[in-house]
Image (tube, rainbow, N blue to C red; front, side, top):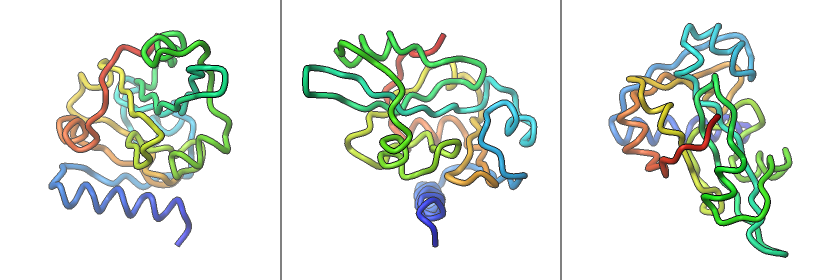
Length: 162
């Protein structure tokens, strides 16, 4: 089993264990938010766009955040920098993002299983009954009841999109 399929299995196991309401959606392999939303049939506002951000907090210290925003918005790096008390914020390298998230780019889950990766979700995403995201695979997505997502993922909810 590949590492990304291991993340998928881990997530589905967690959701099943917690009794979450979700649907699996199989589709053509796609990682771009707009294109995969069209394949799944959801609005961009319901798509969880997941981006790993690196925030420098000192000369030799940094923190990582998993920023989750609606698919029709962009991550506000300045908001994350202020939120985490940083002096600089930028997108994490692909290597760091994939290592911390356990998934390849385009399939990063809106869940953090790594203590070094703080989960921060924009409240606009949580206004919908369901959220949609690639489930650590380019060919499979989940539609997850938002209330279950909030309860299981326990994200920090802050305005981090523009």
